[in-house]
Length: 284
Image 1 (cartoon, helix red, strand yellow):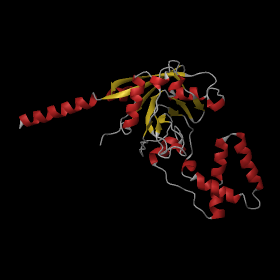
Image 2: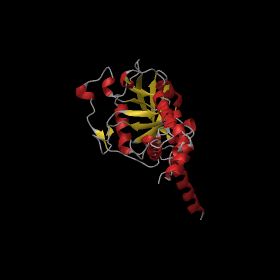
Image 3: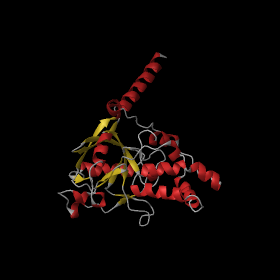
């Protein structure tokens, strides 16, 4: 009996040791505004493998964040922006099949793959190299629990009725001012009026995990399930804010180049959790 117990104990010890030393890739984005550490998801294996290969080969080093939109995202990974770019050796002429996963979404810090639009890319395949990191904004529960497309259509019908001329002008002024938060808030405030006047339902269900994230740290929910999210920044979210705040010109390109380099190294999951407080999903 004691022998069986000892064997059982040694088996548990071996399993525990294996789990605590299991390795994972820790990605570090180096920028003039600080470093960002990120992990990549096992649930999106093709994107993960591709990103690691490009980073380890140095293809991302000395590239720039070529598209920056405050309250939205910062985009990089265009290999042609690197001074050492050689079209014959460094070009990426492939795409990666979309890997949409219900539990992966565009919260602040999400690392996702850029792609061409639906018109020319109906399969929503990802760029072979370009990526973006989400900044986004914080939303209210009312905004997230409202079908904004239905609400917008309801408001459009409402404005066709007599007596709503002033409201129409107010919405137009808010939209033209560029204050999208105030514009959205005004739309949401009209939800009861639309439902009562037009007798339509504009509520929608929303996943609990996404609701919690978007009402606390924020993000860009309108991109969910249409662009592949394959990782997340687990340290250095403030760096995203600094980059996103930089002045831009044509095509949302920063007026001054914001260079980056990417390091990838294997670290134990236990160490990542201890240092950054990130907990890896339980394996099924």
